[in-house]
Each structure stands twice: as C-alpha cells, then as structure tokens.
Amino acid sequence: MRNVLPKYLPLAVTCATLALLTGGCSQGTIENIPTEAEFDRRVVDTAGPVLVDFYKDSCPTCVIQEGVLENLAKDYGDQVKFVRFKIREVTMAGAAPEIMKRYDLFWVPTVILFVDGQEKERWTLNHPAEAFRPALDKVTARTAGETSAAPPQ
Image 1: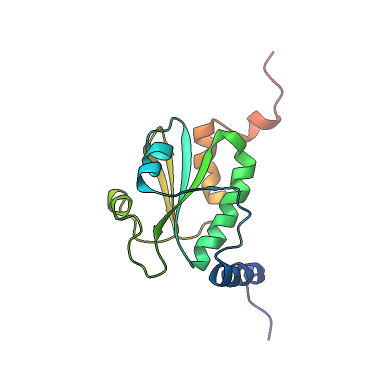
Image 2: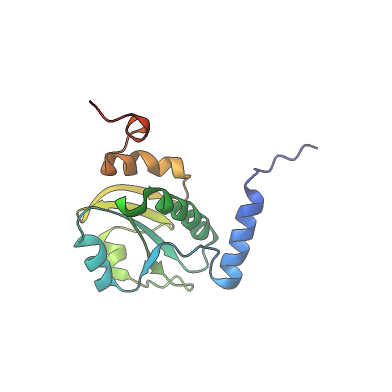
C-alpha cells in the first residue's frame, strides 16, 4: 500500500507533541499580548497593519499556525506588526471574555488582520502562508513587480 500521508505530517506531529508537552514549538518571534487592556493599546489603538493570532493553550493546530505566522513575520519585517492573544485556557474557560465577545471568536486558531484598529480580514482554523499574503501585500502596498522591478525613470 502506498503511503498517502501528507509530507508535512511529521512536522505537524512534532509540533503538536511539543505543544501538548511543553506549551509550544514556536521560535518566539511573535509578541504575546498579556491582557485585554493591553490588546486595545497594541491593536485597536495602533496605526497601521496588525495581524493577531487568537489561540488557546495546548492547541496543536494553534502551534502549527503560529509557525506559519512566524515565517510571515520574518518576511514582512516592520511593515506588519504580528502579535498573539490567548483567548482560552486549557480548561476552555474564557481567558478574555470581552475580546471573545467583541470579535465573535469561537474557533481557534483565528487570525484577524487589523488596519488602524479596524478588522479588515479574518481567517479561521489553519491556513498556509499563501492564504495570508494577498491581504498582507495589499495593506503594505506590495506587489510582485514592485520588489523586482527597477524604479521608474
């Protein structure tokens, strides 16, 4: 019988195992926002694009999504602020009930792109980097031609 498992399964299993045993396999490049008040200060009251990863503890799919977002954070540098906000605890009790209610957050991971404090786009559950790039390119005014084309004369 042919092996039909996806080629990324070993990485997913490794990350999921680390998430459950140690709390994550992230590289630590995305800032965690610790409180609801801090969320407002660092997301809602911030000019420019902010991509927020809403997650819960011990969520293997959240850890996998975080890895994708960390790679994007490296690609976009200072053009987009990348942050994480924990909306649920291990017990599934709401860690941030006001934020959960305000943004109608039920599924994790949920990723929301804010621009000047306003929600512009939302992704629920896991997505590859390519799913985020069009929206991020739009808010940073990037196009494929801009990065390789010579400046106009």
